[in-house]
Length: 447
Image 1 (cartoon, rainbow, N blue to C red):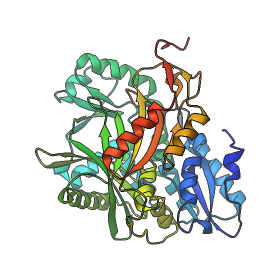
Image 2: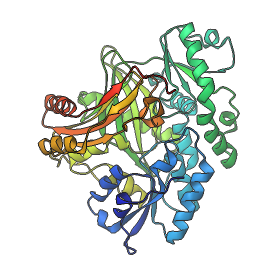
Image 3: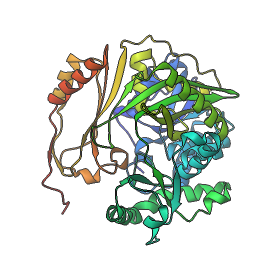
Image 4: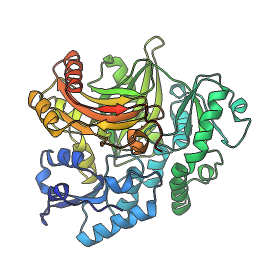
């Protein structure tokens, strides 16, 4: 595993009298958000696992990551809290570590009930059956799987467990289905095996662990997509914000996350009610959560897409710009066994967005933004935060899985605030117009 040194490590607090908060997936971007929280001076944020250690390779070894975390915690001699803002494997490591060191946190079983996509669908169907699409598991090695699914395209196929839409495909017909299944067969075990380990090691549901099907199909749901951010502690379940997910026109990939939501108040209230009902049914406790929905304006129907037992780190900058503090605060307070607190509108902006600058064609990176370019555009927009995900000379096919969906590559993540939604869009286009990114799309083969 990579050992991170240099400027990033120098930013880690080393005060011994502070509360030791171990972070699963510690990275520079989120460390800055943590250090900007009110009262963060009482905490020492330490790596249980660095982000680069748990991401960047296709195969995940949970025992290896846990051993790394245990060694660091034991060497520190003290642990007051463990947190993560990332999905698998971060989200499943936290409850295991919390149980070992008798810390506040959710149970592993409740987290898996949310994260295991097929198990979660079964639970959702029990709790809110009118808000869940039809779904069916299938065997990827059954040559007649397409006919047995019984859905009329378009529909989606997904691994029973995945993240960042990896190996998820929108199916439009039998030929495309067969093509997608060939790709799934090559890579599915890298996602499924870590979950098989969890079920085997920790004695979780035999019904789910014995499931031979590795994929499931579900009817397509469409409309206005959004995400409810909330928390559960004791008998208290709260939704404190709803973020809109805006897709690129004519495509399934995301264009941006935008906050606050543009949905009417009555719809937001319904989202809150559904979220409380389904979270109670999972048994999740002492945890943040985010739940994705689609709202169909014509029918007025809300459909649940997925549940994640954590804050969405992709939304943290949005809360910081609008509320004056990121919702890392909720995550941290829960881990320290404190009340999460309210989110008043004390930020510098009325609106904020997290843009994902994408390309839909593979190729080789010829040029990336220079530091001088980035600093110049930051001088014009001091609120700008930007993460460049590419390096000169790399092939886009070699990017880390969390920067890729089934159809595109995220070249950069751009965070901006504005006093209106129109201002946000204008600032984003100005930023992109002044940053140099060149891809040779003709070089599609690595050889």
